[in-house]
Amino acid sequence: MSDILSKIMLKNFIIVCCLSILSGCGGAMVGMQLEDNNQRSTTLIGDWDRQGVSNFALNVSDGELTCSGLSEKVPFILDELNWSLAYPDLRCSDGRKGTLKLNLRGNLLTARGIGIGRLNDGTKIKVILGDLSGPLDFDW
Image (cartoon, rainbow, N blue to C red; front, side):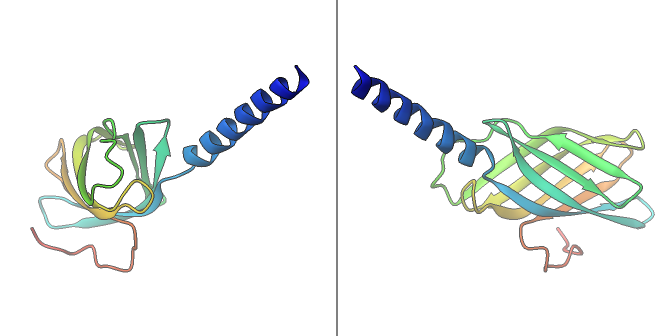
């Protein structure tokens, strides 16, 4: 009986360890540029992290303005090289709201990519996710 109990406890311990490791997986640096109708821009930086089992939280700031959102459910195709992720309810601390779509490359652990969106006042959103050594002034 003791041997069976030990095996069950070991199995549960391994499961808890694996879930703990996976819950911290998937995160990257984010650079976001907001460009209004007068071509003035604001650059925000922050992070993109796993939130629960099937979503990613996006949080960026320039020290004054903060924007954040929670993604739709992640497509669970871990070996797919190209995938998209939508943020239907991006909210900024100044009251603006918008949507964002990220086009990503890699799996959930190595994702990187770019994205575009728009706030409700017409401000364009440009995003780079992953290695922030690239420029944010890309044209579409």
